[in-house]
Image (tube, rainbow, N blue to C red; front, side, top):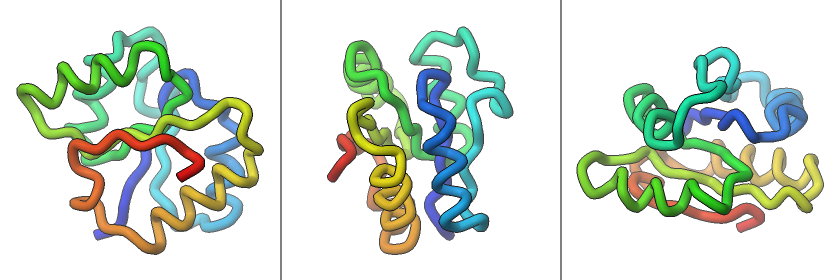
Length: 116
């Protein structure tokens, strides 16, 4: 099984588009498609976990703390925190590399920053 991604509501949607342009086969769900707009972080994490998706977010302020709380009681497929200063093309290339070279179980309960 391949890694699947979930965009957080704060994620630059150009990252989703650029990633899918590189590889249309990547399963990268938008926040809008998942109904994440306006949901608290813990609910976003729960939804991503229920669907087995790594959350991709720009939220360095609150998401790491909520991630720590979440994994106390449930497993999380993982979180990638993306720098807002990073070029969209660089982030898309890193997400493609993650999709190509890793398995979902390598990301469980892990929080990483992009660029790697």
